[in-house]
Figure 1 (cartoon, rainbow, N blue to C red):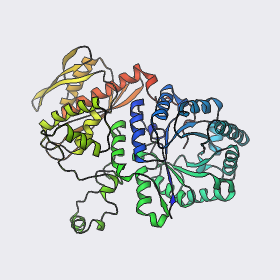
Figure 2 (cartoon, rainbow, N blue to C red):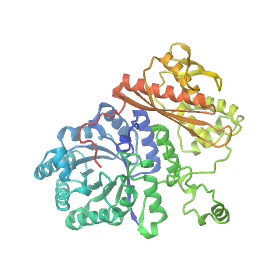
Figure 3 (tube, rainbow, N blue to C red):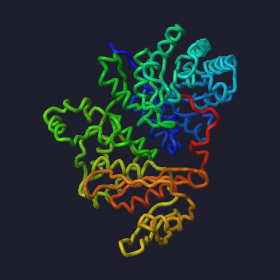
Figure 4 (cartoon, helix red, strand yellow):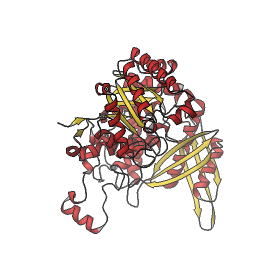
Length: 520
């Protein structure tokens, strides 16, 4: 019988610390529901003491999402622990996750504490958490660079104080798989009481070893893996949920491990994270990249046609990737669209569905074929975004080799429809100049990228922009068969996000974090 590995998803906490990946409360709730459908064992939903917005988001998820354990992060001080409990106490299955660094470099330069002081903080922080909640996790931040014997002291202290899960994180992605596995084995040998708790692994990808280290830790006896959808997270990211889960699935007989993940929901979860954060998945990304199941070389194609197992160790259907075929057209009705959306794993309110249906009909008139990827782009554009301050009403562009590019843009600001024109060095520059005039923004365009959502000459273009204004940095996304329209949508979407962040700071999880915020 294979040993069960608990999947601890931290996309909403550590993953959200990716630059530009901050989510508002509504987006966090939507993703939390998706993670529950994916059947992860634990969702780390945020760091309640970090900001009012994070506290509100954690409270909302704790009250609304059922199934997985709902976990909040906390430092060892009383204020953090009590704030965390206040946020998660309404959860069906709450967990307080307490952390403090244990490496000498962190103690000397960050915490400015002696080892004994750290042990005292572990004892008091974990004990307080245990007095409030039956499920308490302790993380020894930077464990892979900690003195092994002091790390064992910290683990023993946490267990004595009431911790039920012990996390040994490779916080800076420094460890090699063999030494990380040995570190887990050493803790198990030196602290026998840890066998009564769950050992957890949390690995970062600074050297590209996060998944390898995670598997090494599991082979050494850990039974909880801390991961993020698409491998997002601080710096180079965290261990990827889809890679860890599918590695365990494909090599279950050799690893002797299994998970309870609904694997068919992996791809749609990946797409949802991309839509919400605006962080694209690289084409050659394992499991969920667009090239993961694509074959071009003649020998490969010949082999796959004869027997997929010649070059595919997994099937796309296992992770919820279907064939990219025609599913809907301009004559499709509401029932057909609603059925397809449900098959793709999305739950949409009646009000949002009507808005989506109208956008779908407009798209279907422009395209002969409407693919799942097109629908996902529409969902991202019409539903998964923050409330609109501005909406694109009309855009017209004149450009060519012998004329100065000009654009006329009309925008609905909720009170009236405003129109202006602009010119620039290119058509996109002209469109953005007109939008700037209408909205009065001083936002700086940091990045502009274009990708094709689907194939063919009538493919939808997806534009992603990164904007900066008043020290706020946001991503904006837009999709449309007309790349100029997609560009305008992306820019306006980014401006809406900037407006939301500046006018309703309590509603979002800002990038401003308290000192020592990272747990793993």
